[in-house]
Length: 136
Image (tube, rainbow, N blue to C red; front, side, top):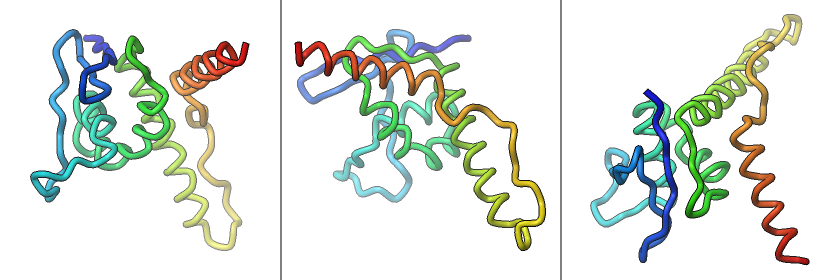
């Protein structure tokens, strides 16, 4: 089943609904009750879409690379989020493989998904277009 993550505005900031149901904001284990991490929305979206392990591993990156580019009215699909996550996992595995190769004699991991997901490219183009329209 396709999930659609729709961004909206509220008095307290950016909100996200999943198939028209507000997303439950998650906290990492051990976070103090009153503490709200700056990547909480990204963490919560990944937790809902991909589970706890992916949220713990990539929540901060997802917040910085994707959520920070989203405004009210933006919609992300679970397929786009899965593609972004696959790219992050592939990049991490490739870097680890390079670090584990003794004296650089073997070929590093190659042939994974593109380094830039279509989602990231789409959001960056949209942001750049908005910046250009403000200048004119």
